Length: 502
Image 1 (tube, rainbow, N blue to C red):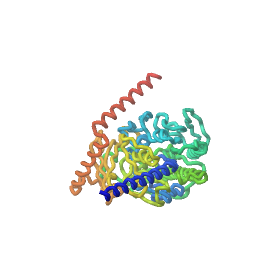
Image 2: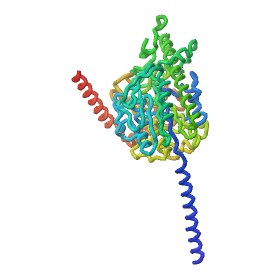
Image 3: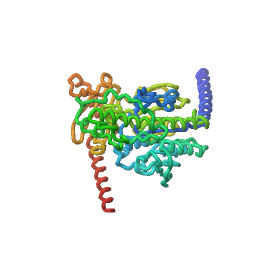
Image 4: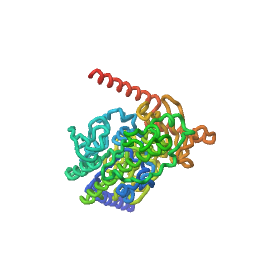
């Protein structure tokens, strides 16, 4: 009896000590300043044009700093490779069919929940500067100053809290100037979340004067798949309208006419050099301006308590398969560069190969800020991955769905699944075609194996997993058809109103 009483007393005493320690730890945690968030996003920046990703055509020393001092993600993917849908998914943590932005023609419903709104409600001061591209005014920000639509590279208009104003200069410099000015004059009693979103290097790739002659006299090497003949692919690859040879415009995209009459392969090569050099020149300015932001953070003492993220809204074709633009589920446009620096959590110089998606950004930012993640967000926080610990329950496959057809570039509607080794794609609407790629033996996706009997078992498993993911995320052929029909009816009604207004 006595021993039991003593044990109970010791137990109660132990609980008291542990409770005191927990309160002390909790108080210390509460006093620790919440991290700032600087989210830098470019437009159409392929990972193949970042030296930290092994680019063989350019260098990006300032952006590379994030890889050296933080974490580089090799398998970060978008869920719909086109500008507005990806941006909406990043804001909401939801797939396109849930947030409503299935293509570039849809206006974003700003009444829905976004991570900036939740951060603001939790005491953050929030700002959005640069390319918005969602056809509705930004919501959830204390300050916003955005390009109308795509914006222009030189002397752009920006809309500041509803007021449109012209700015003299180069758009990448101007977006950085405004971002730094906001940081300098922000409410310093609160942690901040700044979305600095650049136009560059979006088409039609107009460099600034400083970099206008960069790469002159140099031939940029063509990618190994430059002359892909799409031999084993479906009709979707042959019916697109994004080839350098046939669809890159002269002189709108190339800026000048060919110096002499050129045809066939010679014209294609000339167009590629004109395109890729201007694209890389825009990135050179972008990289320098990222360095300007880093300099400000260093000089103001903000660097070590700021989560710095660099990404692009999707990937881009730099001549691979003879293409420019994005949209297809093939690797070059599916993969997003993602670099994150936060020395309080991330070990410098680390690389991660887990499958991370753009819908994961919102829940991760909220988690890092200590804000509850809403259940309706379909993405998942990868905070533990930043610490170097991948949960055993982390995804082994991702789901993708592209909707914008018929439209510019004429890429067929399709959805699919990608695992660490395989990719299965279904093109639908006016065709019914499947493609399977073994990324281990065929990283450039040149050999469609869907009809190969040796891969029948792989196809069966992937189709079953694809069905599971579609159920998980609430997508189906029927819902996609209904969503698109509703969208087309809305566009037709909009055209009728505009015509009646005239």
